[in-house]
Image 1 (tube, rainbow, N blue to C red):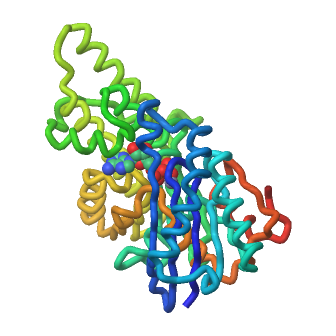
Image 2 (cartoon, rainbow, N blue to C red):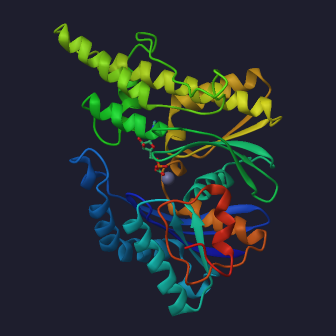
Image 3 (cartoon, rainbow, N blue to C red):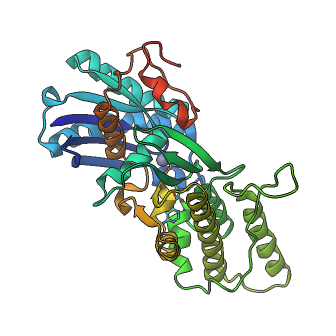
Length: 356
Ligand code: KG4
Ligand code: ZN
């Protein structure tokens, strides 16, 4: 059994987890997530400098609690992992320095993890995770990507958002409707009371050079503007804003766009398993619609466990364990952090000469 202590601090959750695997069974011994939502909500979004400071304040307590709850001592840990990219640099630095200091202190090997590979690995905790190759829809606050995942975690991006990520659109529309931060869960909650067919909002597409459209790519900023115009028009008429109806119509159109393009991409690429991960994967409308529509095309859908959709360190630990399964070199202790790195470059984190 391999045991990993994992740290995630790429955005506004300070999280530490102890996970293990043996014979392809992934187990969470502890997964402490200290959310900073309350600290950022009065600003309507994450304030990077404040988030970094909060991580620094919280990390010793979260680390202590994670080890205590796991009933595994740090001496018994085999590897220490931390998210090193992509994310807010000041935030990433806190987790990465903590992990590397622990590695030096306790003579443990270090693994730097790509945050999106972490999200992808949350599926390892689902009851039946599919054999590769499969198509992953990764929908979070920072990313909307369609990634083909191969046998040895080769990753090929087949689609992406050209502007806002789906979660970002939820957050911006939530703010526009005067809902609490983050917008995703707030919209999902109020949408339950609304009529999803009330408003016809646009399914924005990206044009290609030949006068057609990119089939697997996304754009959500036009949709956000359409909601803004709708609210302005209703305001101008002096009518009350039907928040539940707008929220439900917006949530429906986002789910439709994600489901339609994901299924099209899976069919065109001969993939009969779809994996859905990331914060927005917690959305019930999206989960149900994806299962229903994929079933019609004989495609299996695998959804990340709801409690592991938003940022957490257990998924980072699972990504580390998966890398170790394929004998990835440990990362150099010289490995730093970076705000950006495409997911198909994740393997460079294990090279002797680190990419950053
Ligand atoms: O994966 P995540 O925790 O952080 C990033 O890596 O970005 O995702 C956070 C995003 C936020 O934009 C939040 O509004 C969205 O996930 N989210 C949801 C739901 N829960 C979280 N969006 C829609 N419906 C939800 N239930
Ligand atoms: Zn994330």
